[in-house]
Amino acid sequence: MPLIDPGQRAAAFTLQDADGNTHRLSALKGRPVVLYFYPRDSTPGCTTQACAFRDWVTTQTSHDGVGSQTSQGPDAATILGVSPDSAKAHQKFATKQSLNFPLLIDPDQAIAEKYGVWQEKSMYGKTYMGIVRTTYLIDATGKVARRWDKVKVKGHVDEVVTALAAL
Image (cartoon, rainbow, N blue to C red; front, top):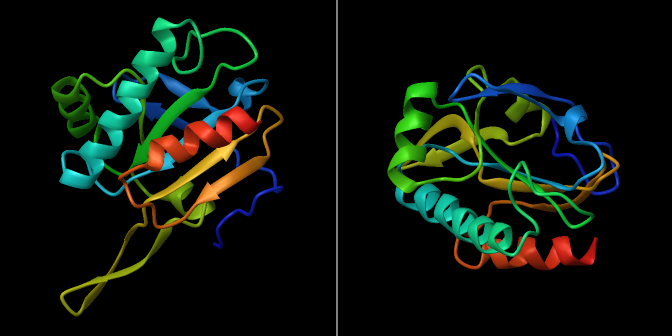
């Protein structure tokens, strides 16, 4: 499936996190959602990206603002990471990195496909299917406000924060 363009309705999803909690996009209506797809737990780029979101959430929640599932107010946003890794891998990664937001399990890549991020990749001349690092900013009405393709990790969270402030 193609990527979802800004202005289009975000694809509905229901996914579980590593603790077995269910997360539905429809339950998050009324607040922005940062939905970021990453290839694999505990790899260098994915760790750097997750820790940058963690640090930002920590800063924002300490100021009673954007970030956690429990933040309130018009500026509150929910951060959700998505990969096809197992619950065990997510738990180990989240614990080791002290992550303060849910990592959702997409075991059959169905949601990654809905969002157009399950794509053909190549490395060392071999092609394979995998998640292309992509972030969606979904507004409070459930529409895609912004999308970052083939994300370069360094400085990415700053770009997301700037876009959130503009909502």
